[in-house]
Length: 449
Image 1 (cartoon, helix red, strand yellow):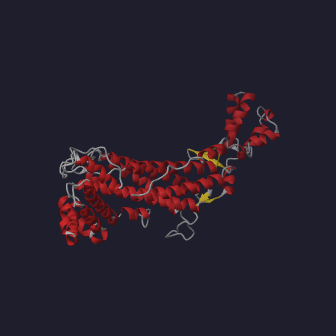
Image 2: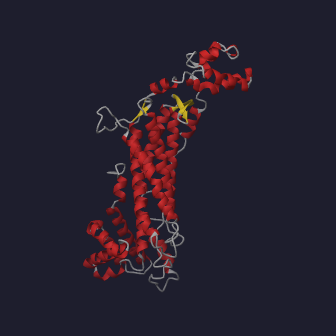
Image 3: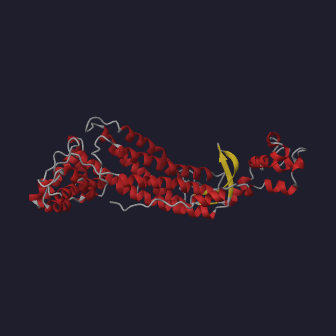
């Protein structure tokens, strides 16, 4: 997909990255067993030295994975042979006691953690840029739009602050999920029964679980989660939210950047294969495309919660590709959002001009509130509704219509009417809301494992 092509998230979720994560999980397991005395110290070092993705053929592993249903099975054989070449006495400790799902689940959590670190960094940069935009345009009036129509005035500062709030919501959700991503270790049926038991240790399985999580840099799970897929579902939900939040920002940029609106625009823009004059909003378009795809991928991950027995057939396997694609698309959208915000061109002049398109009609709510104590609320609303239908014919704007009205006209002086029909003075608490929103800081992130 163009939104992810060439991005850091694409690299972090690619076949080589997954292979390295599988190898990292295998090496961490051997080191953890050595820590509890279930294997020699040299075994951990030997497996770690051999566990380099460049030493293995990803295509060959993929082709051979069909025989056993997953790539871990052929990888274990290849890794064992690689260790045996340099330290044959330690080859037997490769994958000792583990099941394929232990390694695959742990590897995908590693891939997720590493990719989320890339995504949250992009989101923090985008939030910083949006904060600067919100502060710069804190008092810049523009038309607020509801149900596609002009409603009442707002400010571009508040709109940018709203975008920033969504970006921070996405960032914070991903940070929380990243902090909770667990290692997986349970053995064939989640009991840790196959692991070697040192005589001096009462329950080596539980001890190994903690050491393995520590070695791999993930959270220690309370129990093995082979069929308890909360971590994957939570991750999918957070990615869907993030993509959707960025899609909201992109959708606004697309609409505000229409030729007839022109209030914002991408700093660059893409060309057209047919029309030389076009400067298409490519980044916003690609972000919007990701926002429409990730929720469907997340739905697959939620569907995999229905996993039978102690190890599932199909449910676990169905997660691999949607999870990687969701990470990849969301990462691409986050990188594109950072670039979009950095290059965003804002046109206060067009915003002000567009405020005049309805000839003051977007201020009827304000006039009704001011006139209600003078002529009655129902009367004020009814008369303003009638006068609105008389703009621009026979009256050029709402102010002229009100001034000519025998009931409302005498209730307002000329200076009052001018002030009440100035959209720049009708933005309510937009400035204060912007200031309050900008006081929020993102959750602190943690180093990638």
